[in-house]
Length: 255
Length: 214
Image (tube, rainbow over all chains, first blue to last red; front, side, top):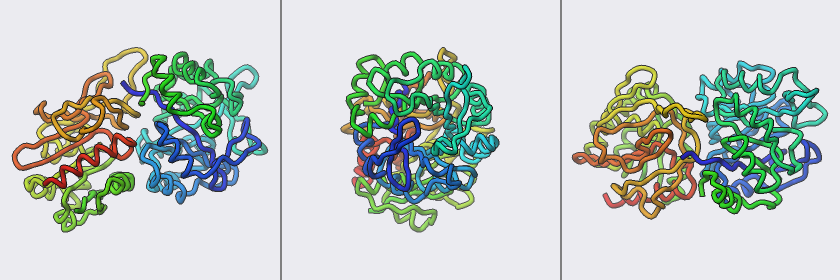
């Protein structure tokens, strides 16, 4: 059986890994390659790198550190941050990334997803979505790397998931912003609603603080993977111990 | 001892190169027939569509090189992902296409039965491979080790004895092959050993052992 994935997420700013709380107040967490190597060794199934300053600064992630990461690890990884053209994506994929994740640029230019899927195949194209409750419904946010530039879009989250998967996104990472960095658990309700309509792999993001949170999001929301950052960076949860506990609970994982 | 990784324009080959170098191989990424002929072992990697893959091999003259020289010479050959599928006789991906015909059999779409929640194609992520023990590729590994997969089509070899590993995704399919018909010595994996951490490196190391023992 296909294993559920545990995915450490590394927010990158100026070539270093950083972490904020609800997208603010970032502190330094260490060197990209050092952390990536550690997570691969501890049993991470995949890594995601977000260049959090790329979109607000109107530039794409740097292929240079992408190839440094590719040389250092032997598990799949995705990169995100300001990728707004087929050429941007190609440079990152050829530098060694397995997938590229698009968020803000796809909201401005939804056809970007079609073009990427046509060129590289759906399996390479991840749709990253930042979502929170606004006036009683889940809505999309964009430019979330910089709080001063963050905007609320008119789009409803569930509509957007339908649209991106129709256009060819092969995976959806749903980041529930109200939970981000506060370690009180994933937004299981929102993720379960997304799961019901999402025909491709769905990755939960935002809110992991304890092993039970992972167990709940796999069991109740039936997601394919769970992404987390601060619990791994701060060594609150060790990936090997997390996977052993999930296995005990009957969740299929790669040990 | 040099391993030639065939560069025919189907995806990023750096990970394959890094992984083989990590387990001690000298590696050349190449489309030059002279370098391929001189290599101790040949790796055919690749991601993408079958028809396009064959067209690229043909345009570089690598199809005849593999079929008429490398395989009959008994030089160890390893196909990975699309590279595995290209070794068979034919595929039904986007119409019918001829393959290299080095391993008898065909390629068809993965077809898991309807169920709730539905199983997704492409089959993407870490899944287990049940080693048949027919081959040394999985030597020293657990009988049910996990490897990283990304694919929508599967190989169906004519000879079930050629299957070195099985994987379950709704249906059971051959995720590793080992074909030693006549002088040819051919291995293939549907999964990506170069992305499969320790288990993948161990498998590549086992294959290098085979190359060395030639």
